[in-house]
Image 1 (cartoon, rainbow, N blue to C red):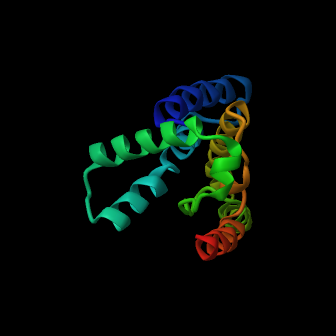
Image 2 (tube, rainbow, N blue to C red):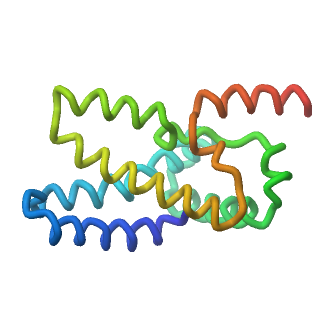
Length: 152
């Protein structure tokens, strides 16, 4: 899903939680919002690492074009491709956050934002008839990518 949509939906979600749950303060709602949007930082970091270019604008344009290419390809074509690793977009990161919430309960608000972000990504993939495998487990994706590279 595009960052602009994460901003819109994340804002609405955070405001709703703030209104519906009195225990969620404005600070906690802000943390949920920011974590639901800023977890896409892994896209930017990947761009910087691969291209040795720190331009946020070029990174955005690059991933905007990649997003369009991905959704204009069939599910079958996309399953054959080697996919980038977005380290914050997998069950591994979620599990780490869950574990960290035990000693640091405030991290639950980051976890809520991250889960909301991933749910939006999954909905977007399903709506476009794509597989969820690229955003489920980064370890699984690593293994699949190794197999795809051997076939090519």
